[in-house]
Each structure stands twice: as structure tokens, then as C-alpha cells.
Length: 488
Image 1 (cartoon, one colour):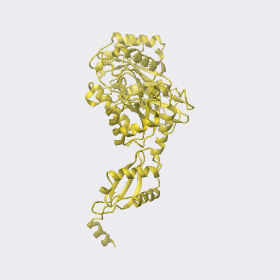
Image 2 (cartoon, helix red, strand yellow):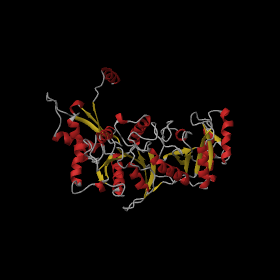
Image 3 (tube, rainbow, N blue to C red):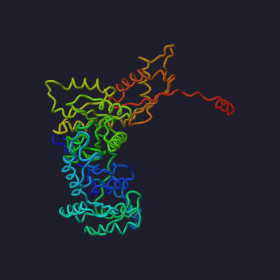
Image 4 (cartoon, rainbow, N blue to C red):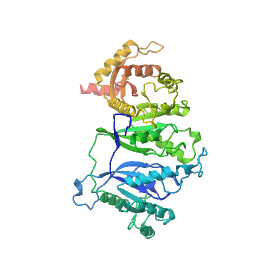
């Protein structure tokens, strides 16, 4: 909830299924299997998943349900949690900067407990192949201590074939009934598990249909305050916030409702220089961040007001331009800046110099920690979403481009004049304008940048990237001309 603004947000209330258990029982693999896509990072290193990683999925109606053809699939939020009890990196207890990762223990365990308490159904995973271990008993005791037994469905993962089912039955001793045997690796038992999830949630009310939601990726270098921003929007500790850089590994989806609109906020791993990657987990986290940018409609690019713009910031800005993403530049931690030494106007000039190519992107000064500027961030994101989705009439685009060329058009060294034959908007998000011209090479480079700036002044795309596609009118082939004469 925005505690310092007139807007209210709340987490979307879908039926929630949480996956819990000790490390290395395959929680992330099961989430990916049920989601039918790679959402969570899967790695044998304990402690890879730290936050709650959530995804919205549809659970199909079981085949044995009478008259099931007219029933819609059940939309649920599936949540992966950290493994209870072990929190390390590939190198061990300490990260590459020497921070003791044991400091994250209470935060990770708090995230697991929150997922358990908020879930309508808890999938308690055990490993059928390694058998029960003391940490499994600890998780079981935790579920009983919080009176969550009725919500628990015990699942024996790594039951790769029916030959492993006898081993899986050991989990019945935990007191949560006969375990459901599945294999996240090869899909064994997946249909039975989906049917059980649908059945256990069948009596819960369905979420009413809503307009298509805006997807907003929160990106920036390490410790820029991305997770803090998500938590401030949610009004709860939805993501782990720590001074230890790189705490967030996965890209985390958190859905919000604001008035009658919904949006999805995607918290991403902090960007760092590739030569500083600490093993494969950093590599996968980096590529998940790039995937999050690709699927986002709008990007909130957080920069730390207390630190100079770095090469990492500049590289991220270039990536946003390459992908033509509408971008809100959020100057976070502005409350920590001494205004006698730096004012907003000077900082705007500084950002324009350092983040070249993003001079059209709106800038919001904020403090996620102090809940300042949150209303402006979300409002601006919706504004950019609407701008990028606008479709302009072909006649107006043609008249505007012709007027621009008449006032100042490109020409070659040999005196060839540029001519526009046709212009039209062919796509939205990003706004894409196709221009059929006599000599496409005349328009590329410096003149293309000039044309983009003029188009932003004339069209309702003043704060979003515009993609220009130049092409030359194709002459009719000789064979086409002959066929045309024969037809006549």
C-alpha cells in the first residue's frame, strides 16, 4: 500500500499453492514443470532460491469430473520457496565479497513461513531417492506447530518410475497422509498431482476477469533498491532486502491491483559486470534479468542517487534502448542526497550526459525506503504503457513526415534528394513506423536520430522509444510486367 500517496495497491488475491521442503528436493524443478517453462533457477547448490518465486498458471479440470467440458481451468499462483536449513553459495558460506550468508538465514526463513501461512495449499516435497532426513522432520514440525496440517499435500519428488514408489511411501510416516509420487525431471505422476491441486482448490472462489495487465520490470545494478521498491508497493516484506549484494537471484513476479487496473511487477537480479560473475548462478540470474526485460511492457530503471553512474548502469541503458523498452528512470535514495550539493535540475543534466540515448525517458526522484515517489512511479509506468500502445492514423503520419522532410531532408554528397513514398505505423509496443523511401541509406545515422526527435514532438510518443523501418519500393520484375501485358 502507498502510505504516502492517494493511490492504494494490494497484492492480487489468487488461490495460492506454496512448494516447501528442505534444500535439493526439487522445488524449483517442480515449479518449472507445472508452469511448463523455466521460471526458477535450478542448480544443485543449496540456497539458490531465497525469495518467494511466484508464477500464475492454469490447472486443467480433471478428466474424471462429470460435465467438466464447461468448466474453466483453475487459475492459481504457484510459489517456490527457499530450502529450509542451508544457505550457501557455490563457494560455501561466504560470497565473493566476503559477506557471511548466514546473515540471510532469518530473512529466508521468514519468507518460507510467510508463504506457508498465506497459501491455500502447501506442497510439502520430500526426496523419494535419498529418503527422509532430519531437515524433513523439522519442516514437518514447523507445519504442525503452525496448525497447517489440513492445507498440506505431501509430494514425493524424484519418483522417476513406479520402481521408486515403494521408497516414496516412507514419507507417510510424517503424518500428512499417503504421498503423491511425481518426478519433476521426467513428468511422472504430473497429471495426478495437477488433478489433486484442482480438487483441493475447487471450493475457493474464482478471480473475476480483468483487463490485460501491464508488466513492469524493475532493473538496476546491485543494491539500487529494487527489492525495497517491491516491498514498499506491497506493504509487506515480499522480497528479501539485504546489504549483501546479489541477494536476489531469480526474477520475481509480484501482482498488484490499483483501483480497477492490475499490473505485474518483476523484481530482477542486480546487474554486475560479466567478468565479476561468481559461478553459474550469477550467469543464469543475468540471463533471467534479460528475459524479464524482453517480456516487460515498461521498465523501471533504478539508479542509486548516492553513487556515480557506472559502466554497468550505462550498459543496462544501452540494453533497454536495444530492446525499445519504454523506461522510467527512477533516481532512488534521493532522501540521502545533500540538496545543498546536488539539486534535481543538475542531476537531470548529469543523467542526460551519462545515460546517452535515454534523454526522452521520464525521470522520477524517489525513496523506496521512505515510500516517497511511489505514486509517481506507477502512474508514469501506466502513462508509458498507454503511449506505447497508441496507434496513429496513416494520413497524419504521412503529413507529419512530409512536413519534416520539406523543412530539412537528407541528401547525398552527389545531390540525391530523399523522397518519401509512404509512411505508416505497422505495430505498437514499441510504436513501429515503416517508411518507404527512394534511398533508405540517406535516412540512417544522424538523420534518423533527427527524424526520431521531430516525430516525438509531433506524435503522442514523446516519452517512449520509436522504431523506424526504412525500405525501398521494389520495382516490378520483368516477368511481372510481361504477365500484366498478356492479361491486358
